Image (tube, rainbow, N blue to C red; front, side, top):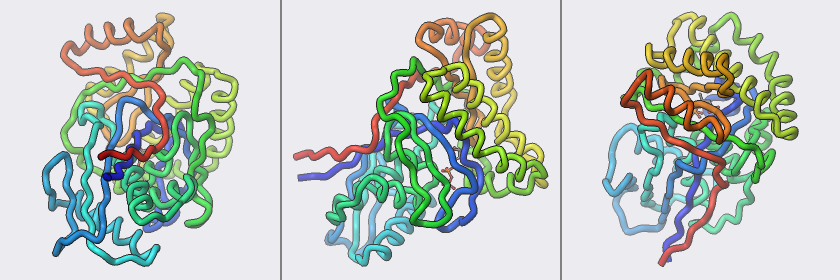
Length: 324
Ligand code: DP6
């Protein structure tokens, strides 16, 4: 029987953008995300395999590149922690279309951590899974849970993990991922957040984190879409301002990114409530309610006619799927 783990990716509403410890991926701030139903990764981890080398098979093809080194090094780190050293094979299928402009590392490392633990019968609870997913990629920490999720920054390996705020939210919330550019980004998240720490506004942003987290928790608790949207857009604007004001100033925005940001602001002025959020790339994600989806898509296509828009709602936490 095959043991496959499925994890959904997530979009940060209050952003993680900087580490206190790069090797353990302990963040300098807490963050809050929404797990997404439309995008996920499925991973099968097998060990004790009769192989001379460890193997990574992505979407049906054996890979031997930068991404596979990161994956193999991550598994070796976990093997060191739990006292194993046998060879392994990782088969992973990504259902995160590049078109969505969403990183697959969140769902990828959450699925890998879970399949690793299942394959070695480690019996880890979800808090522990969240901690070991963090060692692969910070945002993966949150993908262990569904719905609205908070990653408490903590101060060391034991205390930095995510927990669910509400795994089955009733909020009328849709995320529209607008595909503007799917080419590989020049500055990875890992690198971008390091450069951002040189901004003179970085400390100010950190000082605001506690309040932003608590306001977002209240917005979620009170089912307040407007406040959730305002806080999400603000957090994204703050993160991108740090990049612009860093010693080596940079930006993930492209002209079309700004076009969509302006479009969202104009829609709001015209009574269609929506907010944007942007990660480490040029693509824009729009937060809106069901009733506005059609108008927003129409407005986008009137401005940029051929862009793809992918809709997503709340997704579940990580699952183990047993297949014959
Ligand atoms: C902008 O989790 O990709 O998406 O921890 O270095 O692997 P590493 O970075 P990563 O960074 C995600 C940054 C972000 C914001 C977020 O998801 O909170």
